Length: 192
Ligand code: B4P
Image 1: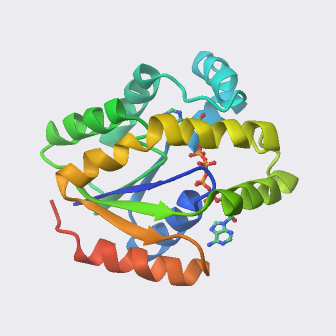
Image 2: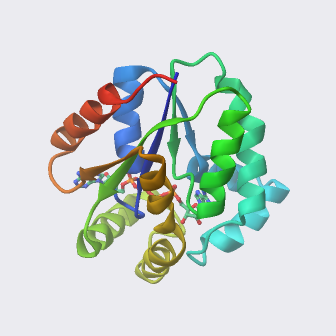
């Protein structure tokens, strides 16, 4: 099994490239953002709590996110691979993911660290905001999300550097060219 973490700032193309990985490799996909948005649409208790964080450009608490993912993970036990999209977003989540996978006899094979400059992130998210209907795709919240990423999420890079599984991906350019680099990194990663 190959567990792939797709990592980057908001708007770096995690969701976009995850779709390409699913098409080519047929991996299972866990997007914590998508799971939370579904909870919000269904007006569950978790959704109501999550919305207050998301609308402020903040991260939902580690405890909620980790329990939510741990509960979903067994559904992928027979998959050839799993994509973790938007998770981990804190150092504590990275440690929790390692524990969750280790207790299932596996680990992260590769962490794809997608690099996109801030001006390009803002441009993409404002563009997406015209049609996405997402309450967090407006300039004020986008600015807060990028700040949250810089302060709370970037330490995750060190975690995977120490693990020896971080691969840097240039995330500006055509979606196909970026996907070619991603495919190369996935193909080179060991099955665990
Ligand atoms: P997410 O849903 O994970 O969203 P994201 O970071 O905004 O987007 P992504 O990087 O996937 O961008 P996309 O491919 O769509 O998170 C939303 C919120 O949920 C978070 O802010 C947080 O509050 C909460 N949350 C989620 N996970 C959490 C966790 N683990 N812990 C705590 N809280 C959590 O790309 C964006 C746009 O760019 C698209 O319109 C796309 O078409 C375009 N694009 C992509 N690649 C391009 C390219 N190469 N060139 C030009 N445009 C491109």
